[in-house]
Amino acid sequence: MSRKRKIIIFILASTAIVFTLTIWANITVNQVAKRFITDDLANVKPNNVGLLLGTSRNLKNGTKNEFFFNRIEAVIELYYSRKIKTIIISGDNSTTDYNEPMDMKTELVKNGIPDSLIYLDYAGFRTLDAVVRAKEIFGQNSFIIISQKFHNERAVFLARKFGIDAFGYNADEVQAYKGFKTKLREFFARDKMFIDLFFSVKPKFLGEKIIIK
Image 1 (cartoon, helix red, strand yellow):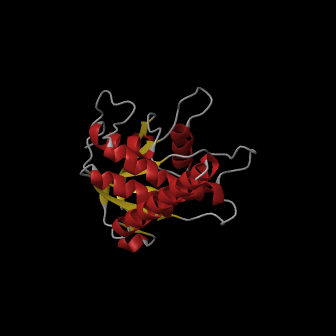
Image 2 (cartoon, rainbow, N blue to C red):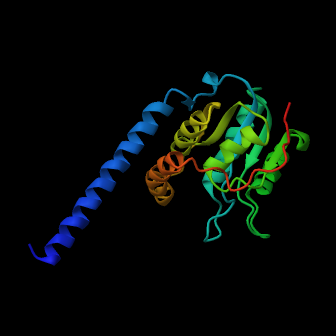
Image 3 (cartoon, rainbow, N blue to C red):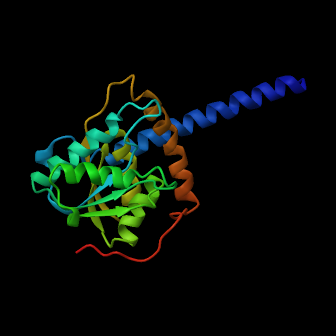
């Protein structure tokens, strides 16, 4: 067999393995998480804390990010329905001109949620960091995660792997063509999640505890 043929076979076999593992990862996450997430506010059991997963306020082209505003609306629904009392906003603040938690807090305060009930986690660089820090830094062993369904599935799965009694409330989705890239990334992000779990990856930062009572 020629060297070129061996390389082609190796590439095809590797691609098939990666594709199979990706399908397995997605099916596994979906099957586990579906018992712990909901689109129906009536099915949400009240909890002291809601964990809002961050995203950018605007897209790269300057238009508003519907993922952002739909998550804000979901938190407002939970708060005014007395499903949550306090909110942790976990997101990226890696540069001086990019601050997901503060942008989200600003929107929530504009909608009447008291500043004193909102806690900011500036080191929620990844979903793993967000859920683990909610437990380790903010002292929460149970909370409601707020994001879109595809994201909540992975977040709730992760949280429960870390011994957290987590549930997810699904914010409204965006139109399919607008969210295609984000959902495609999520499809492969689940491979990375299992790799992180296998190697017992920890959050990039922990730090001083801020216990929410």
